[in-house]
Image 1 (tube, rainbow, N blue to C red):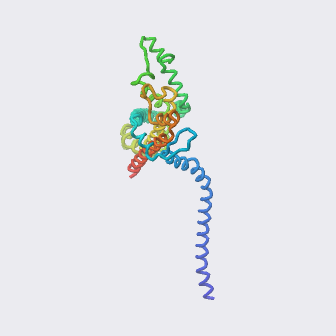
Image 2 (image 1 turned 90 degrees about the vertical axis):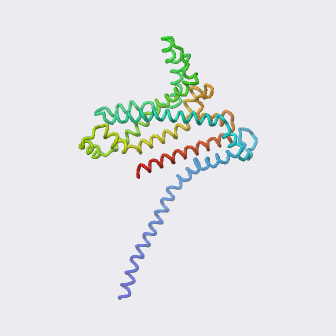
Image 3 (image 1 turned 180 degrees about the horizontal axis):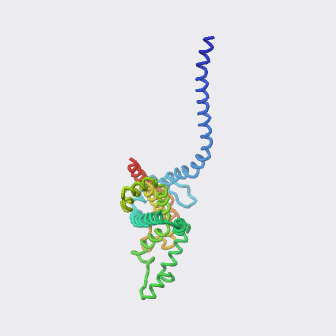
Length: 309
């Protein structure tokens, strides 16, 4: 009788443990099968093209009936020793610095303004969002119709006061004009992201700062900005990654000109791939852009983690 009691006492924990192990195996198995389609899709649309791009960057690969042949590091050498490559990166840096500065300044300011409005927040935010719904190709066409020196609206207005303009055809004004088009289109995205961060601010903290006698400027500097700093960094990261592949508006308005003054790195990549049909060099160029994007992403993530600590 005592022996049966001891056996039953040990059997129950074993049965319980067995049930847990079986449950875990079943749970792991279920999760695996649920994730399997996504993993296959990811491999097909992302991992395989990435590996193929690495393969193409070491091949003499052009649009011809000849099979691609291995040429070692020649594509990389051709890309890295090309002056256009470095000049394109320089213009991209100017574009990113000026464009992002304006977008962050206007976007964050507009989000703070809409946040303190007592009424009609949603209406004003919706109207502010309109440029986001316009396709980049349409933005380029709109910019061309406004700024063209022959039939553009602004050129016509300037002619009325006796001033001849050549905004898109001038080396010194073409890139600033495209930067302003980009700012007009994408600043609302910054506003939307920052406004969402403002909506999630804890009311208790803001009320406590107000009770302590902190004015709006002090609350803004010491409470609001520190709390939404990660949101602002996230918006900055998203726009930075988007600027690196910016092509559409330039293609429609200036096609990289005049005198390559608007040829940023994304446009240079498109030109190498589809105009010169040098897919091996284009693959090497694309990988160099990927390296820069990963590096910038890591720096942003590291900065965000420092903020958490």
